[in-house]
Length: 295
Ligand SMILES: NC(=O)c1ccc[n+]([C@@H]2O[C@H](COP(=O)([O-])OP(=O)(O)OC[C@H]3O[C@@H](n4cnc5c(N)ncnc54)[C@H](OP(=O)(O)O)[C@@H]3O)[C@@H](O)[C@H]2O)c1
Image 1 (cartoon, rainbow, N blue to C red):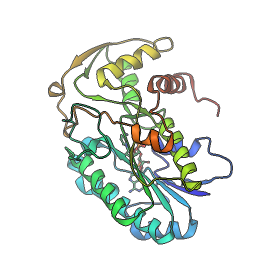
Image 2 (image 1 turned 135 degrees about the vertical axis):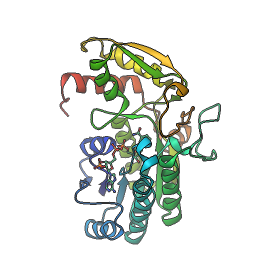
Image 3 (image 1 turned 60 degrees about the vertical axis):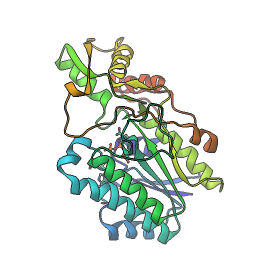
Image 4 (image 1 turned 180 degrees about the vertical axis):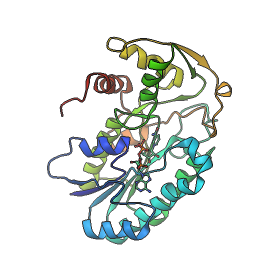
């Protein structure tokens, strides 16, 4: 089975391209310079040339705040890019796994979000991703849309790396305590992608939209505490982490207060359990603080 990955240079992309895929799979991971998903002709050309059985789209404009001032760039990658990929998959009879986000929801629900819950994004990033989901559904029957949340890993820009970096600069960190979500390791998303690809290969895939995220909901403040607790044996200092409210930390984009995703459907269909984010965080911290692990 041949798999083509878009967004190979991002946090999930890097983990996906270095993950332990079964040896019978051929994984093509073109970089951003080779393929710009906003260019429809380029997307269709690479699919016609590579003839993958499965495409995994991890490419996206993910800067939530910058999307507010650069909406055209966000829509070009997150909506038009997704539409180009889905159309090219349809043309070449490839299946597609497309990554999406908790930010399609407004966060006002009191419990975890199920796949069937009403979408109502709060900002440009969420709106462009939600439109990308609709474009995929409209163009291609053989798709899996995988919504995830609060992604962290050893590469790219994410909350874990920001906390460790700020720790070197400040003794007190003020972190938002009234937004709740489920941190998800990029490597665990890669493992989920392998399990879904195997189900597709066996002809057992149930096409549609799924949630996959970490197992235990927490606030950003709680997550920061866990980062410093697990990093403590190796890290130079442990800052004081002070809880604040969202109102005390204004940002260009509004964020959902509740980002918790209900992951039961992916469990029932593909046998994939929510990822144990504390164990995965410990592994990421080992890699960040002690150097890369041997794989
Ligand atoms: N990060 C999160 O917390 C989070 C949460 C929920 C869902 N997600 C979703 O998960 C997926 C992966 O996210 P991530 O955290 O791995 O994102 P990321 O680290 O920002 O990586 C995205 C990758 O896409 C590339 N890209 C952007 N525009 C492109 C274009 N026009 N053509 C080709 N490549 C392009 C980027 O290249 P450059 O770096 O050169 O721009 C980058 O390598 C995305 O669909 C995202 O929406 C992420």
